[in-house]
Image 1: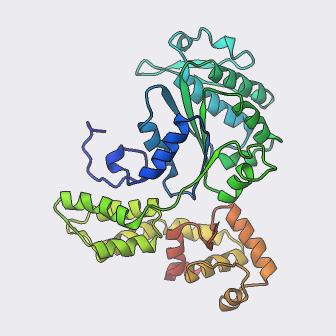
Image 2 (image 1 turned 60 degrees about the horizontal axis):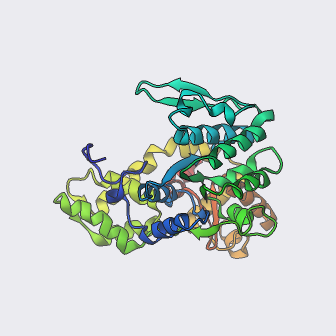
Length: 376
């Protein structure tokens, strides 16, 4: 990163080093301590809270004995897809020089031979063609390959709750049977759907019950985030209105991605951060997604549309079927609302947390409350 000139310090994708990573000091140390002491971790946080950035911040601080491996399975739909991606990552990161020539890999992979492809930089990438009928066998071979390593892999599987969507039965139990005997590897199971992750790791009926250290990620402290943002504006010789930042933080409840997205736009303002610059940045973000939001709302049922608008107008509600909420926003019967909301939660359009229910995408909520959102 040092060789690249940073024009905007508020990144909205990727990890760019500790200088551009806000706080998470305690969380980083907890994860590092767990890895160093042989404890697997379940990391739970809604999407956009920065759990992926935290994982990469931990990876950047690992000692050389550890080899970090990151795999996001959010888009995967079957055990075969997972096995292919998992095997490719593991082999690409951990193969020895001899194995990178193709020799020695057949000792592990008998049912599914990896293909080696030369790249322009001279490196080789590995690919696996995993048939559904061979997925379990190839997964077993990959774990055998892992156990034979002389290093300690740290494997972070992001959006781990996705394995529950796979059509195959017993995937959780299958993975648990391999993980518990893979003694040299450390696992971070990260997920954004807390209720599903808790069912998988915190309830006795789950195969992973009591097998990991549980860790939930909250928003970053307002004062620490403010100090972090202010330091960049001050160094660039621009103003930073702390009260305006505090209002921005409250507006988006301290959620990392939204703060970074707005600050990234505000950075373009030569006068620095103030209320006008924040409002303009939020307006840009909402306007740019207006067509997407219009299509998204239009694709919902009538009940779902009314519920989304009600949640946006109210800022959220503790109990979705509360009579006062239903009456105020002229919603249908409580049973119909509960059914529709359950579907909206499953599709990440509504967030369910200990505090109640809200529109998941806070920018979508702003659009819903605007004239454009109410016109549909």
